[in-house]
Length: 461
Image 1 (cartoon, one colour):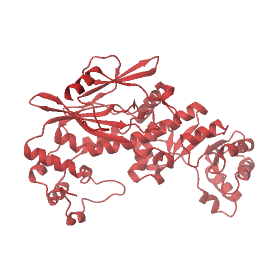
Image 2: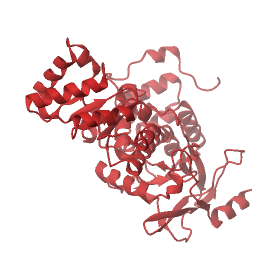
Image 3: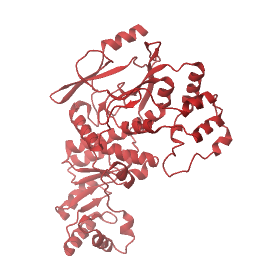
Image 4: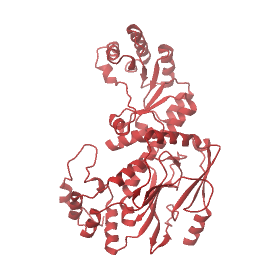
C-alpha cells in the first residue's frame, strides 16, 4: 500500500501512561485515520485550507430497519472540547515523517467552525444529515473518524434498544428492560457506550457499574449459576443468598430444574418470612416455563434472560409468556442482524473567495446530495407524516430537525441530561407511523427530496 507509512521504531513509542480501556490525553487526538493527516499536510503545503461543508449521514438503511435513532452527539462534543495535540503526539508525527508545517498547525489546533446536528433521541432516515460541519477543510477532515465512530455505533445500539422497547410496549405490559452486554461487547469503551445508547433507546438500567457511575444510569443485577453450583445444594445456595440480601433477592432457578427451583425459592422465602423480589429464568422454553413458574411463585417477580432480542421477546409475549422484566445482552451490544450501518462523511460544499460551490459524488450507488441541508419534518396530531430533505434556507413547511451546536468554534448548545434524551427518544418512537416500525417487515418512511436540491443536482450534472 502506497502513501505515508509508520516506521517500525515508531511502533515502540509509549505515549503517556496507559490506562485500562481508554486513550491517554496525548493519544486521543490521534484517533484519526492516516489519510486525514496526509491530506491535511497537503492542504497546508498548498495553501488550500478552504472552508468546506461535510454531511454525516446513513447512506443506506439496513434492510431490517425503518428508522435510525440518533445517539453519540454528546461524546462528539466532548471530543471537540478536549482535543489537543500535545508534544508527545507531535513527536510521534514527526517521527512518521510529517512536515513541521503540519505539526505547527496541529500544535495550535482548535475547532473554529460551525456544526449543526440532529439532537440525540431524534429518529432519522436514509441520506438525512445527522451532523453538518462547516469549517476550514483541515479541521473538518480531522473530525471524520471520531464522528463516524461515535455516531454510527451508538445510533445502531440505540435503534436496536428502541425496537426492543417498542416491542414490549406493543405486546407486553411495560416490563422493565435491563442491558447487561458489557462482557460480550467489542472492547471496554464499546461496552460502556452501549449502556448509554441502550438507556437512550428506552432501557431502564445496566448491569455495568462503570456505565452507571459515568452516566448516572441505574445499575441492576441478580446472580450467576456459579453461586448455585458453589454450594452443596440448590436449597443451601438460595438460603445463603436470602440471608444476605433479603427482600432484594432475585434467585436464579434454572441451574438444575426450573420448576423445582421455583418451588424451593417460594418455600424458602415463606419459611424465612421474606418476600423476595423474584426469580430469574435463563434457559429452556421460556414462555412455557414462565407460566409454570407463575403458578408457583404467585406475585413474585419473574425476570427473563437468555439470548433475547426484539424477535424473541415478541414471540415470548405473543405466546403468553409472563415476565416482570427482561435482561438483554449479546444481541443488543453486538448486533447480529445489523452489525454495521453505512454511515458516511461526505463533502457537499466548498467556499472560496466568499463564493459557495456545491459539490456531490456522481458514482453509481454512492451518489450524494449537494449543498448545506435542512430537514423539515411534517407532524400531524403528534404523528410524523413525512420528511423533506431540502437546501438550507429553502422556505418549506415542517419542523426543522438540524439545530446549531457550534458557531464560529463556540459551543452554543447545552447538552441535555440523559433522562431528557430518553424521554425525547420515547416520544419519537411513538410519533413514528406504525407501518415503519415493524420488526418482521416494514414500509419505508417518506423522505421527499426538495425542488431546490433536485434543481441543484441537475445544474451540477
